[in-house]
Length: 109
Image (cartoon, rainbow, N blue to C red):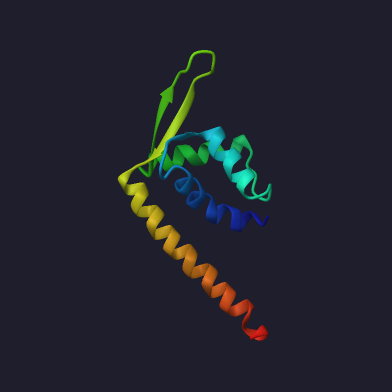
């Protein structure tokens, strides 16, 4: 997958996956990989810094959780600002995809 396309959509993917429930970083990364059929994958060196940046921008909030027999994990949830950003990004992405479809399918009409 082209790096620029991936970079431009990663925020949207993360915010979407934590819209309804908190998830830890590894779970978010695995869901993206699984749901994309392996097309989108992330390495730790680039994925966790992105989560930290989203948290610094106030779009997500994280909290450490310790469960017996498991290592400590940081669970992320969407903030009010994050919900607004997600709504805007979904709209922008939808418009972009529709425009690309109109252009690329115009000759076949």
